[in-house]
Every structure is written in structure tokens, then in C-alpha cells.
Image (cartoon, rainbow, N blue to C red; front, top):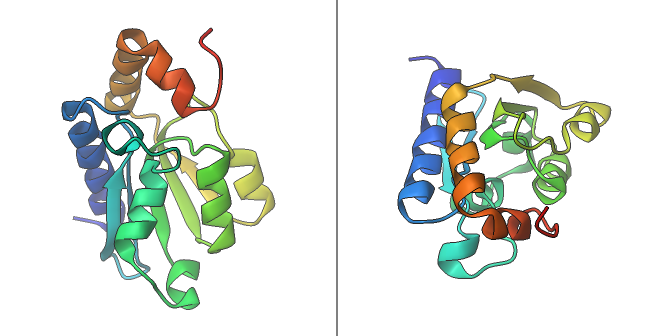
Length: 152
């Protein structure tokens, strides 16, 4: 199994775990240049009543402290286009690449990532899109709170 398969599979598993817990179904995994999962996590805003515990932040947290060079060679796999906060974390640590499951239900900071020289790849995953559409339909208030907007 390739590093990209491992990273995306881990992110999707995390999103499904979040969904089963009743949370926002977004998962992420930080994978090293040599294909090892450094950290993985899922959005825990609802479960932990946290304003900041998005999937990418959870993956970084679960990776622990790492040398700067490790981040520069790493790829962040995420099931959904990253919000401004998660985009900022990827930029701050100079992550090399961000691989996104889907960006149809939410389009985040992809342009900014590219401006900062970070490679961005969108997989257009139907599984990721289905998870998000179901969540947004069933829990619109939780979704809009998660992205810092009023219910539309």
C-alpha cells in the first residue's frame, strides 16, 4: 500500500469514527516523507466541547513535537478542504503537501496553501462527500458552528 493510500485511508477511518461518535465527520492524518503515519485524528469539537479541535489540529497534536524538517517533508491528508485555522497550521509548520478528500461541501484555504508553496491535491472522494452531506443535512446547526458561520 502506498503512502498516499495509507494516509487517505487513515483520514477516512478517522472521519468515520467521528461520525459514529456523533461529531463532525472530518478526519486527518499527517504522514512522513517515508510513508509513516506521524499522527492522526478527527474533529472533536462536539465530543470535547472544544472551539479548536478540528481534524488537522488533532492529527498534529497526536503527532506530538517533531523536528521542523519532519513537517517540511510531510503530507497532511484530510477528508475535507481545510478551514482557515487548519490551513494556517499547515502553513506555520511548512507541511509539504495537503491531500484533500473533497472540496465540494466546503472550500477552505486551498488557494492560500498554494500561495505559500504547499502542494494541494483534491481526490474528489464520493465517500467523503457523502459523509459531509449527511452530517450537514442532519445537523446543520453543528456544521455552521464548526465553520464559524450562522445557519443558512
